[in-house]
Length: 183
Length: 195
Ligand SMILES: [Zn+2]
Image 1: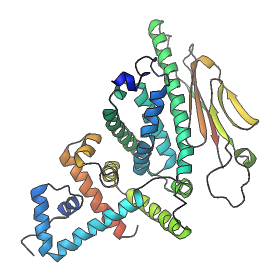
Image 2: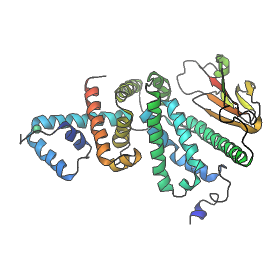
Image 3: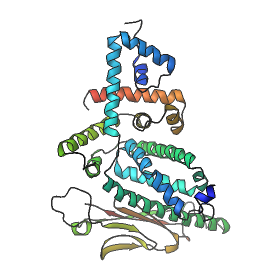
Image 4: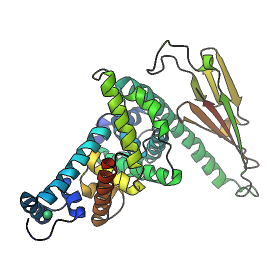
């Protein structure tokens, strides 16, 4: 029974922080931040957008009743919020990426050379992704990095399957060309 | 080679298995016999592997994530509480007569305080490039926003405790929005940490 698993959901006043809020945030925060970060390529912006998304989600308690639906819904609003953010920002300052990522890279398993290589790859990756439109970029990340099925990506991006396939194809073609050009 | 070559769009889609069964099979048969299309398809596959290698996996180390996760959770909690204040105010306004000129009288005043002193931000760590071991805190509370570390700090007090909306965020910053119920004036205080 739902109430047995989440006894505090129905009883608390709206917006009051409870154990289920905490559980919900901890269950999805990393996944959502990761999606948003990969679309935006900037830790600070990804943090802002992620926080905003969770606040909006938690303000709508009815969205949290079905956890599986909530997970999909979160992905959708997070991706769209990231796309909106990209559009507003227009131009992304990728230089901001370096410093937090230096700290962010997994240190234990990699030596300095691997770290450097990985860091360089990230910088190259971001400059290539920067050449894509926000929707192409989001489609590419969701499909090829996050491994979501194309139908799910279409739902997230609020478009038809044909449109999303066009975004994916364009993004893959641009990505291949630009990576090949060593940008 | 068999018939016409496969288009780039189809090759790009075939790479991730996004072409559908019939067209996917056509690409498969074609590329078994056409070295040109096979090479292009392999190019797409390599590019997709590079993307997954560069962008896949965890974004951060466990330590860095633990810190960021704590910060974000605290901000989400704060934002949720702030939303409750706004909701409460909205309900109160619906019940009370609307103050004259409310919609047009919103004035934004932004005050940015940037603290640059190194001792406040972090203790010197010899040769360290890792995550901070000592944290200066940008904090939004019911009183206002401020920055402190240990006993030292600075706080911008808000004009009206009851109508403040606090948001801490953007890596070392905190914002507080104060709404004057009478005039509708909105004041935003922003305290930011800079290295
Ligand atoms: Zn061919």
